[in-house]
Length: 81
Image (cartoon, rainbow, N blue to C red; front, side, top):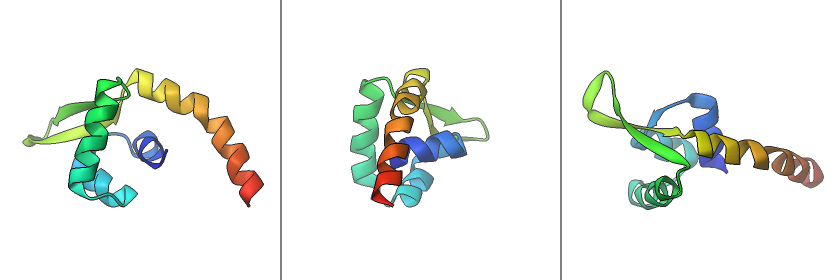
């Protein structure tokens, strides 16, 4: 959920920056991104300004999935708070 929210709010991010924002180490994030990419939720694309870097972004499927879970997560957060 945090990963989806970060990508939704910030747009494409490097894997390093995404790991820092969600509190994951690089290896764990790589495995998570592999799984999410296999499911079609995220896409990895070359950074247009740095050919050595890869950016991670939500795919259309990932954005649709995130949008469907957003109301339930808001209700959960309100109930907890």
